[in-house]
Image 1 (cartoon, rainbow, N blue to C red):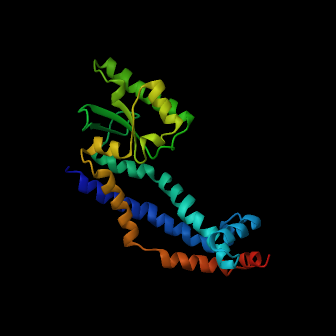
Image 2 (cartoon, rainbow, N blue to C red):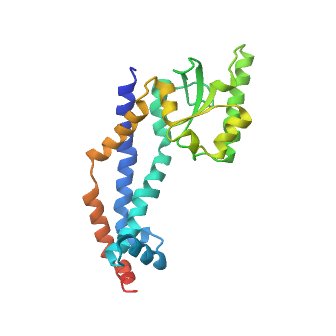
Image 3 (cartoon, rainbow, N blue to C red):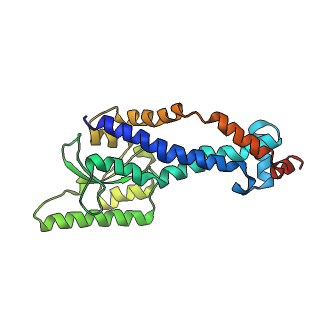
Length: 237
């Protein structure tokens, strides 16, 4: 696949510049107690649950780790999905309104018109109607131009996850509107024809972490937060 190396390199750059850089910037902010909505009851409980004691350092760690390993990076990934999608558009971009990419499916050989979504739980009830409306518009426009596009060639491509993890909203797209939702490894195989592409993509992204170990700086953030008066006062409770 001639676009494979290009896509993988672009994804690495995207993750490094958009996700990792923002993750680091947001983590460095956590040296200050004002970055947290501190619940003294839960903070002390979680510190003891995590480390077995309620020292200032343990409390700081219990505050920082959930943010840097959960909400911070997840939010950043979601906010930057459009730039991820733009990488795919460079190779598979569509000029059709409401369609992110077009490609020939390596499983059935048909041309697919695809909207891209991040993960198996990243759409809501209103998104279902929006997606169905876009697809209906494309099908109707094709009819006026004497073209026939099958419903099952209008698809939603979910960039990661398993088919079994799809939310009820995705399932409604399939059951009510008869549009396939293709997920994770299966989607990337259909797009590229490379059975290993999904794993290669994950490896490309994780290589960014290998190249930029932030563990020492993370320890420093926790240490600095632990030295603040707000956190020290919790230690005394």
